[in-house]
Image (tube, rainbow, N blue to C red; front, side, top):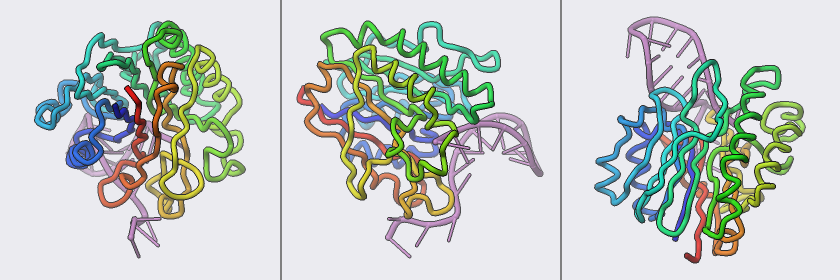
Length: 259
DNA sequence: ATGCCGAAGTTACTTCGA
């Protein structure tokens, strides 16, 4: 089966491209982030016509996550256990479901904004709650993965200019340690192929010709347990989807599993 | 060519993203 994760940067603004991509790539399960719409405003009918059920979690502005599936959606859970709030709000950043033989979380980890901003400790607290929430599934026999936009470059190779970003969010030791702590629950980073260039970046800013110049970051990850990683036949970043008018600033990460 | 930012709500401009 084929499982993908994609920060789509508005599911409604991107609907035509999403449907075209689903038709071309034919994933069985897709974890989406940054829906930028309320759950009730997600395009469930258009997706159903394309053969996909959707479980969505969103409040209408930023954030918002969903899981699409052609193989059923069950055991849906919204929000992490003890998920931290920001500015008094429990933000829609995490949703889980069982789809056929696999269980997945689709997560949109807080950006962090700046190490001096309250958003930064919020990001670290979110990752701590994520670890606790997924520990049991990570240790289980069923293929399981946490997929999404982690807003962390795991290593200095995962961004185009580590020198320029030194000391900023996405690359700090505390963020990388928090990510490693999530992985210590029994998950490992499924490293995708790059379809072009030396490294599989997943995000390129819209500004400054960053995509043509390949000034990117690898921040969209799939952290999988042993049952999942043992089934991986292929994994790649579909950078073709980053091209052209109306693209998201993130590309889908696609995983093929022998399941 | 891959091409100089884009989306949404608060409908003119602010906020956010990484």
